[in-house]
Length: 500
Image 1 (cartoon, rainbow, N blue to C red):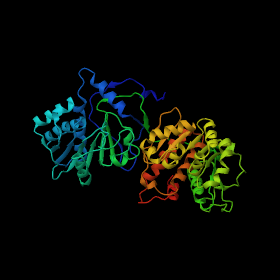
Image 2: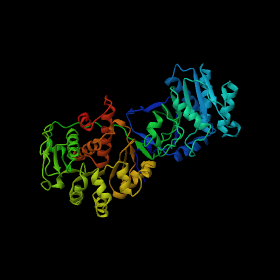
Image 3: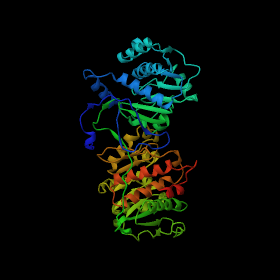
Image 4: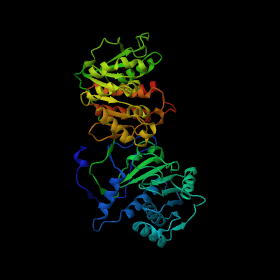
């Protein structure tokens, strides 16, 4: 069983109706200052049914329509013509409810629909009738021009590819310079996994309703959603989520009466011939991350034994350190040479970060896999990107990316360690624990060496006495936040180190 703080374990209840939405993340950076529970589609449907069974409950579609209309007005206050593309289900009903409010507020909503509304769900039929009686313009075609579009085509249940004419509508709204607001999720996005169909909406804003869905925050979700907003529709559902959107790590204050020995030692083992820069990046990152002492053990015996830019780094030959006293970051630029060192490191390291080539060697060695599994709990972190994760699982990158949360959790259980599955919406998973999805970071991290920086930063947090889960979550959040704060068009790994 997953365990969660008590605030997420109390019973379902109904709050006073509210249509105020809260921004969770900006399009290209983190925004929310607290953790958020994330839920699957199955859970959202159960919550809908539970709410509907309560006598006297206001239909959720009415509340959703009002929330959507209010957010539209807030995001595009000067818009006149508002195109609302409605599908045949409840997502379309939400759009028609919003159209009524927008019309009453002096806007010109234009609803496009091609289905027979009388054959839709009961709430959607009522929404259509309300919109028709209110005088909302309805047509089977798209308007020639519009100031903002509401994507109310398909909601959380849509799994089939989007077909004509809806596919044409999606292409039309994606090609438009006017902003698109997706209702609940962008049409064509898988709400649980974050994968997208070939034809899918690329929204500027997404208003997630009732619950925050997993797929909004990982894989292709962030690219499809744009800026993500949330409205719980007045329903406070605080049962255990399926994952958590990470909030900022706590600020750590160093005691005045402390010294370098108070903050642990990190040893970076990597840097085979031609790849010594990767080990240096990891070591520099550990330095900026606050570790007390940082040792560099280069696999290339001919490598320079001094970092002239950071002389604080201490270079040591392999075998000169007692691994049981240090946190080891292994694999950065290690190549195949790291394979000779891994058995001892896995057996003896006090705490261990396994990255890059260390992971590739483990994927090829059943013996090493067993040894990693047998390490003591909460002291080991693996940091694979999707291809490395696929190698470790014996599957394809496509399979990993199609279910990132499942892949990370499977790796965590298999190796009994904390797994950081890197990528858009990096996932931090641990055995028998709630997985976290990280909200920070952007495409500026898609450059060589940024993964080495993350490995070194994770090692620094481990060395300072944090458990593996806490260290991984803090490092991933801070690593991404540094990229979010970077103003230039390109972020190099060496610059990222200094931003830490």
